[in-house]
Length: 246
Image (cartoon, rainbow, N blue to C red; front, side, top):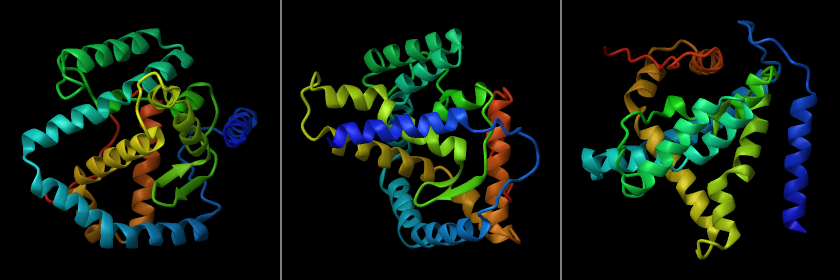
């Protein structure tokens, strides 16, 4: 019953996204929920300052650079199956074949993804259902700040739900074919570890942005929207958070 309810929620959310007006991806910022978004943003900031940022610093302090790089490769590699599926949905068969080849090569020769044996692995090449909706012409809708997750929009939020339940890795863990106990705990732990790794790679940039922004909320919103517009516009790499110490 619980599984059926989850599947129903995913279908409903996906249908909502597909039926939503295809708002144009222009430079106009749609943030009608700004008061609520700022409240959630403040909550996320408090959690980050008190818990997540110190944990990310400890993560980078304790582990040698070599180990950090191996883990980062593994985290990116484990998201390749989801990217492969979404490249197919986007009609990008070249992207799908490259993503699948990277996953197969890095998961075998690269020792479970610890090594990028092909040498073209990049987070910029990962794609998800939010990107797929964008390729289908569905507009972003209003800007949102999600608890714990951070900047998003309506399209990407629906995409996150679809990515979670439709991730081939999660499906494989739950299928029983891998013979693992507590598959949901394992999958969630990997996602949290991926998020910690990503946060640890932005320590200096986010710290600089906090110190140098007149309005940190607006700055993060602008960077997120530019990042998404650049990626859906076909840019090979999206804008990064500026480092004011450079």
